[in-house]
Length: 119
Length: 258
Image (cartoon, rainbow over all chains, first blue to last red; front, side, top):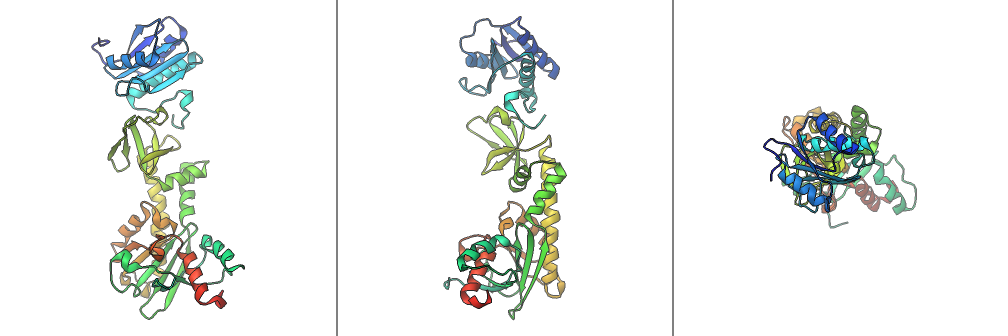
């Protein structure tokens, strides 16, 4: 089932955590709509994220379980997520949410483990 | 070496990388005052597809530190000139123009064409064409400007600059150094200082292998009607090692001169 009729990034999150809120805030800051879906138990992050990406009209999905997160695109094979990372704190969660939006916008990512030069 | 048909030529010195191996070869110091060298087996007739290669051919050595030109007229007389500024200067110009700390990054920008990673599967080259990859590129490269080595992204370009800006800085640096210097050097050795009297210009040296410098010089030469081509030392080495080869051949024929 598609998330919604409007173009949005699909988020599968363990809701009601500070990190989940920060991810949503990151997307909001970049001005990209998102659809949040509660996912308390995710067995396979990569396939969950891919599923979210396929259902998202923007083709971008993000799944998070505890500190582990997966950013996926619908064009990628399910077992090859775009970005697999561990979120250390709220600040990183916000950057990750921002990165999900920046994929849509075609801007360089900012997550610390991707350490590039471009801002 | 006798099987090759050498063209008598003078190349002004200053292209030091050519001197070092010779040093070891002859077992003694090489005097930098050595001027007359022979460019070995350099077949411009093959490189350029024209007849009599000696008459009116000009050698243009685009090196790392200097640009040298040598003109051989029909009677075998040789004129040379040595002007400062070549590959290294281009690197410095790019480095200071972009305010880079890293010389390696500037060198990269000079040497390789640019592209922008547009999606995990595709990059847009600086000429506007798009190349696809069967395997997704890493997220680190997403939406970044990269240099391309052999068609694959090799390094992320420094700073927040766009492909267009970096390309313009790079080409401007090369134009200022190589095109200006090449025309200046050629003008000094050309008969009557007239570029229109030149017929063939053979490009030598490491910078003749650059992906756009020969083309830029060639474009500038159109106005004067001479033909540019890259040399092929001993018919096998390409434009590199021209001075070294010439020195070794000169030594082989007249050791007392060295």
